[in-house]
Image (cartoon, rainbow over all chains, first blue to last red; front, side):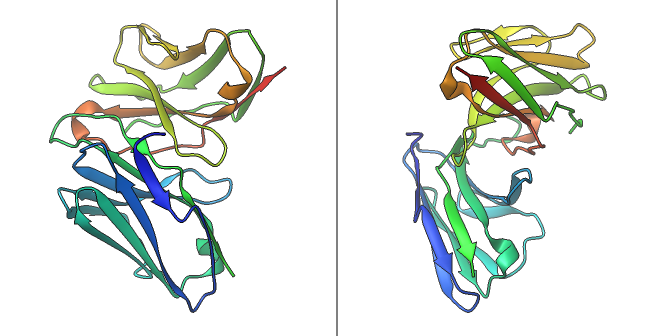
Length: 115
Length: 111
């Protein structure tokens, strides 16, 4: 138990569906991250939020829409996905102060299958 | 961030030391070496990090060569639960907390 929870743990959705992934951290961190891990590929950083503000978007398609209403919650809204978007989506959190590294704590991930 | 090279897979017998190598020949003076691991279908877990001195914690030891072009993560007494993908990441500490993961090494601990 890392203090970062993700729901749902598994999700199957059609290409025309709209769904949302939820992440919550109970660690008092101010930064939250979304990563994507496709089969046999390295983790890819998608989005970074710091104090609820998006600070990084790594050229992620607009069919993925993040939302960070407060420092404890992070959502990833999904719509009109493609089968190649099937992957493990991981959320992480950390302290993030300029010029200082802090350990990232990862959630268990949501296994997404797009049919 | 400097590029790292790790073997794609390694095997280790349970109870023996697991030595995982990482090459980072282009590392610069202000870049640290970080190790994370990811057990199957779980999120990555921080293990250890260091700059130039050897480091040890309750999980592992990190040995960095004097020229800092390579390092070795040592799990002193590997258990079946240590079976995971191990990632070596080199980065500047002052660039915040973001991480860039490579392919890693799949360590399989055999009974």
